[in-house]
Length: 452
Image 1 (cartoon, helix red, strand yellow):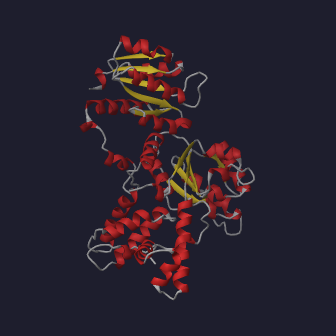
Image 2 (cartoon, rainbow, N blue to C red; image 1 turned 90 degrees about the vertical axis):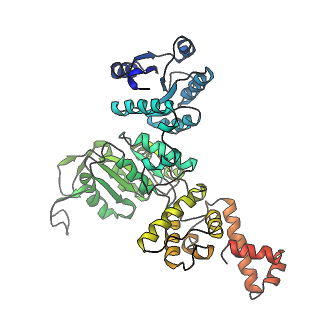
Image 3 (cartoon, rainbow, N blue to C red; image 1 turned 180 degrees about the horizontal axis):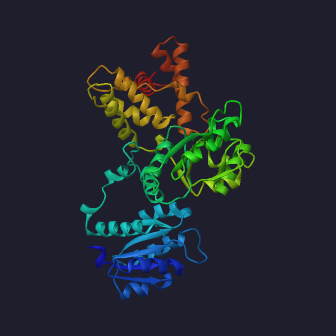
């Protein structure tokens, strides 16, 4: 169905939204009906058929935080309406909007939207209604983000949806997650799919900046401002003007640095060291940290007013161990990449290697997997990549593992116990198995599992 032949219903208790959408769509579609009161949905849907319903997620009621939208979405489904439902959501309800997709919504748009994006979303939904041949395939879900960010797992699909919807807005984004999960790739994806894509993307590892460098690096300096200031130099914020600035490891900056950063974000201007003249800036801010959100909420460590400023939308990158078969998807990607780089034949993973990849906890996440596959490609000599070719770095286990799941802690304990007992019996497997209460076969299985 074409947009020109479509009937659209818009349900939102904000009259300004209804007026704006009606004016936008009245020349684009067959007809558009607007309604403030969702209680009238049953009456409206019984009187007329619609192709698309734009449904707000927040109405003035006793129910809060987007749950109203989910409630009315379910009601529409109960009424057996054939209309595709597009949820209208604010920044803070994006997670609920993603959840609405699982409950039958066709898509969602984020307020305030750009008109061409809203029309594009409606067109895409109408195409999907015609049949699966016109819809995006699941295997293409990661392609909207980029070739380096791969994932078919439910966790990653939710992130891809969120990035696709949030990127065209100017919302500030905070990316949380362990080291090596791909936070920098998400930041780049946000920029590349934003309306600022043609402008600069500037990354700063603020956690590595000393107090003396912090202001100069971020805000710039005038010639003579300090001993080595031999010329005027713009800071990273000025360099990113019109584009996106990505502040990595934001959780590691001092309270004094936080105060200076907050002032710049509030005033949207920087003043170079040695100057009294403020320079206006227009940047989209993306931040990342490996600190848990609970630690950021500690006002002794991080200013709460700065958290609110940088965290309009939150994206949590899952650890690799929670992404299931994405491990194999990524392993194959790196295998092809490094086989080509080092001009090696592409070797498939055998069953033992596959099992080893799927059972290893990857404390270093995607970064550890990448380096593991690179080493395997370089060193492998057979016709397949075997379990023995996959050597995981012991460096990752030297860091604090307090937050690891219980099953991972138990695995580490079991491995260490086996090593101690085998050492005690000078490598005699029979005696070690007896002391451990295992058969020789069971012990050999564990030796293979832990790569001992």
